[in-house]
Length: 149
Image (cartoon, rainbow, N blue to C red):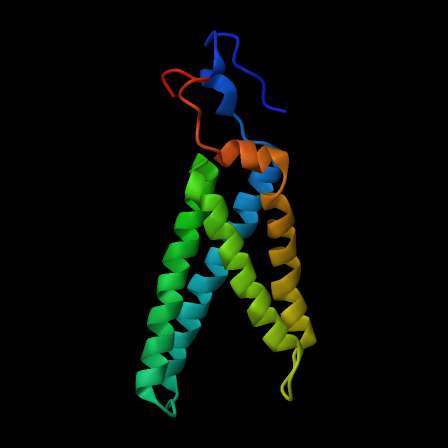
């Protein structure tokens, strides 16, 4: 539990140190962002070294993955800062990843280990987003209760 800083004399010191749940969520979302950056690099190398069936589709996939990498990085940084919108963005991204994991687990080219590697951190982040400490960390301050916030 985060305690007020005695030197501040009020609630301003309330967010000096994020809880373990917040730190773990930030780390997991940050790892997801790094994985997306790695995916962009791999896709770029593939386009340069291999001949794609459709160059337009390959470029579109690279652009979309790069946009996702920037977005998930921004979510991670904003979650660390406690931005109120970051929790919703993180939840949405985890749901997208769960859909991808479901596709990886089933079908004629099923890769259950890859699906599990995507699903397990996503489920963990979803659970963390529902913890009290993460919700308090990302809630918008009430100006009537916390003047000057």
